Image 1 (cartoon, rainbow, N blue to C red):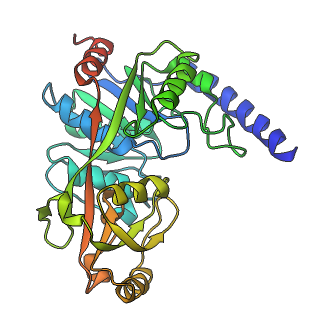
Image 2: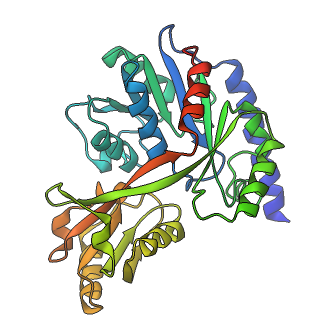
Length: 341
């Protein structure tokens, strides 16, 4: 009963704040188009690869900057330029893991952070004069107007258990999809067709935004010591230590097993955890005793781990790309929203 009461309090507070912020939302000047990538749940829908796909795709049409919160970074409150597209100026402790990953994955694209997303966008405009700004995780940041809201939903559980915090993982109720301009189901590969169709029907009841299907496709392995890459087939039969601090450990481990890994032991922490040398070294000793020959981690975790902490086991990350089932149709919808079709 208490949790249901707290859920109603949370939902009411969110609705009041949203209404107030939307009325006073700041809009970027003419010539700057703002695109948000967000979700309804607390993490786990794969926003990071989607943001990178958008930044690369829009770069063919003009200059782009990425703006994020810099979650759990010490500079989030103040705001900062993490990268100018050429050099990276801060580490994960200052900028947060997602911002640092964007900076590494998007050469030529500036990365700016700030809890105050309006100020961060203004900073990006003043410093870099972009034609496009891609906002990472901003569907609930109502104080900033945008030209297109893209909402990602997990194909298996688009609305989790239908409850907002603290009973569920929803940040807003499903009715919030009325504000979405484009919706995308993620991690569709391997989903039972009947379950996928059920998710599509659920979503169609909460708005008229076009719906697209997508998956997160592993590309290759990156050696975190020297930056070299190797093919995924090298994982077949490999005994590995899995290291992850993300929202969905189950999906991560399932992906490794699909690639042929033998996960002899796993080190898991809550999303955005700041890794320390001691915990990695303890895990390495256990993994060696279990026969592991390498460590596999996520891209987001790799930017927070010094490969020296993993000695003598080599540290590799799995590089992920976002794949759309109907890429041309998605692009047409996006450009139409931006007035560029």
